[in-house]
Amino acid sequence: MNENGRIKEPNMLYIMRHGRTVWNMEHKMQGKTDVPLSEAGRSVVEQAAAAYRDTHIDVCYCSPLIRAVETAEIVLRGREIPIITDVRLEEMGFGICEGTTDFQDNPDNPIYPLFAAPETYRIPVEGGESLEDLYARTGAFLKEVVEPGLRQGKDILIVGHGVMNASIVCQIKDIPVKDFWSVKMKNAPNSLIHAT
Image (cartoon, rainbow, N blue to C red; front, side):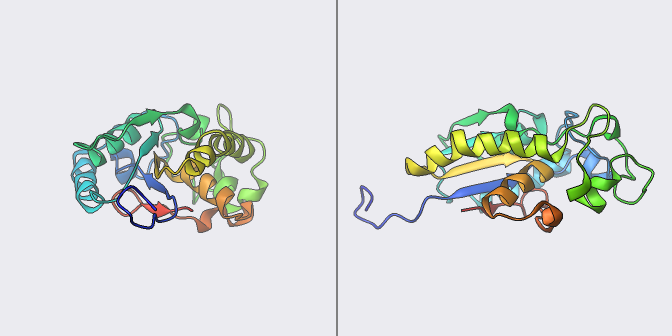
């Protein structure tokens, strides 16, 4: 029971993808390129703030990339909820393919295998990151931050990115890498999922 005599609901881990950017609208691969929210993206995140205003959250962990930080700040504006950035929540690095638009459709794009058959994407593109690397850093975050927080009774919000968030959901739900893209995260406000 909580301090009000009510039965406490199980602790929750919420995961949200950042709002839309100009690069999202142009279908450009962002990765670690630090692209801010678009005006339209900010407006939609304001809607998310209203929609989730009554959702209990104790702490927010956020990617340090500006699109995620802006999203977290807007969603939690006026609430006394700490926003803590952690580099392990940055988007997957796509190296020389960041800024490209044909990554899902063009077999000649060096990162195409990540989207066509993720279980085969073992050697990252130049300057990029493998799924193994991504899983290692997000797995460490889950083990070192999320799991202890949930055990302490905290409801946690993660604000991050499509691929990074999917890696967390896949690990929590034991989704095999070959089914990685079954986890689809739209941009805020339609991106809040309960991962626990």
